[in-house]
Image 1 (tube, one colour):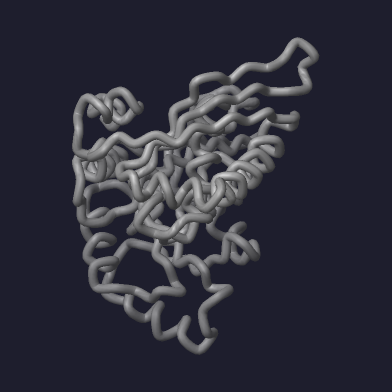
Image 2 (cartoon, helix red, strand yellow):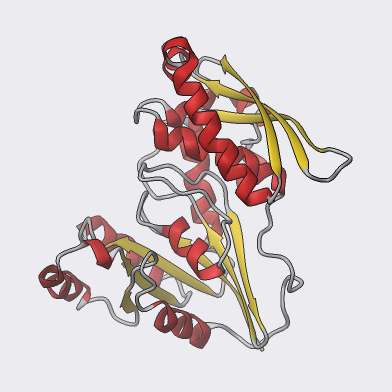
Length: 297
C-alpha cells in the first residue's frame, strides 16, 4: 500500500484549496477568489483500498505585512520539512512569474520529491498554454502537469504521478477520516469564506471568527450556532452589517446554507459583529483567536 504526506504549496490564490477539495472529494478547506484565504495548515485525506494520500493545504506564499501573516508564512515553511512530496501549485490563468520559478527551484532543491500542478487551464487561452509550459524547461527533475480542478482535467494523471512518488507504508489515519479539523473549525471557516466572497477586499483579511456555541439539539436535526465576527475597524463593522443590516443578513443566509450542506442538518445561526483594533498584530489577541505561534509550528 502507498501512504504519505503531500505538502501543497504555492503563492496566494493559486488554487491549492480547490484542488485539494476536488481530489479528496469533500470540502476540507474554504475557497475564495481573494488571496490569504487559507490561514491554517489543513489536512485533506484521500483513502482508497491501495493507498492513502494526506494532502496538507498551506497558506499562500506572499510578503508578510502583519504578525499573523508572518506566522502563516512560517507555517508554510515548516510544512515542507517533513513530507514525502511537495506539490507546488501555479495559477496558469495568471501565468508563470519569475518568482514562481524561483520558489519552485528552491523547493525542488531541498531534497524532497517535487511535482508542479499548473492549474486553471480551463480559463486560460489554449494558445497560451504551450508558451507558458516552456518556461519550466530549465527546471530539472520536476514534472509539470497542467490541470483543471473544476473541470477534472488531468487529475487522474496528477494522482498517478503523486502515487509514483510516495513510499510503501501503512495508513496514517483510519479510512473514515477526511480531515484533521473538527466540524466546529469548519463552521468558523465557512463563515469566514462567505465574508471573503461578499465583502470588499480590504475587509475580510482583518476578520476572525469566534464560535461561542456549537450544539446539536436533542432531536438530532438542528444545530444551534452562536458566533462572533471580529473585525479590525469600526468602519469595517459598519460595512459588514450594511444599511439596515442587509449585508449581514445576506452573509448569514449564505453562510447558513453552507453550514447546513456541510453538517447535513438545519442550522439556527446567531451572529454578532465586534471590533478588536489591530488584532492581527497583537500576540495576546492572536492567541485568543486561535492563531498563537505554537499553532503554526
